[in-house]
Image (cartoon, rainbow, N blue to C red):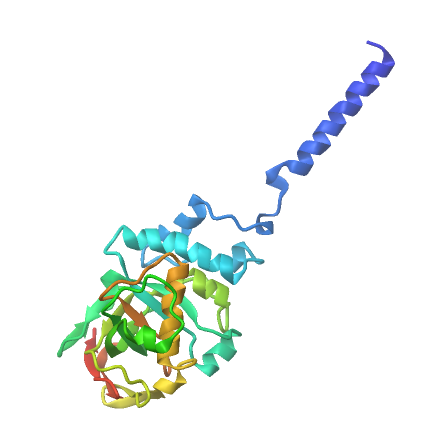
Length: 288
């Protein structure tokens, strides 16, 4: 082999090595692109209630809210459908103060599990089965007609409702939360820690006069008004129903839409709780 041929062969080997280094996926920053794969889904869906969920923005710092909702759909829906199914849609971060804290202009949305739907009954006892259990007072709507396409008219939306009710939402679980208010992207990705929710007795749909007084062992924890809820409970619920359609969820008869916490969020400590309400029927229950 001539010297020129040897030189060309060496140069060709160097060029091929450099090209391989440029395209080797092992040297690509993992945060550069957000890809939903089976391993990522299992790192969320495969967790038990006692295990902490990851913080998605620590894995993918440049992820968008749209991508977070796409991920929510891909890990939450199949997990729920393998069980009792989907119970409805929930909102979170719906008051002016909470929106300012999270830096958002509309509610953060999640998917409710059907197995978490608890119909209220007098003397009800709730037994904590999950770390980090909280109590939230909310307004909810139960459907009597399916929602199969987007709705943008309140009167049309009301035609799908069986009634309005008080809701005690009981989110639970732990995750790799940073200090202070969570990133809304992470909050969406963990499905707002949706778990159980007590559905109060249904009333006719009139949201103007709703007020809440939430008490524990006879002492007031907080008060709240229906008007504290974003653009109003009906507008919020309609927004959440349309979000469900974007997630490929057509809400069915009997499904519930819950509109987000009104008043403070409380640790679910053992005791006797009562939600006194105007405009809807209240609920009382014990936590053990």
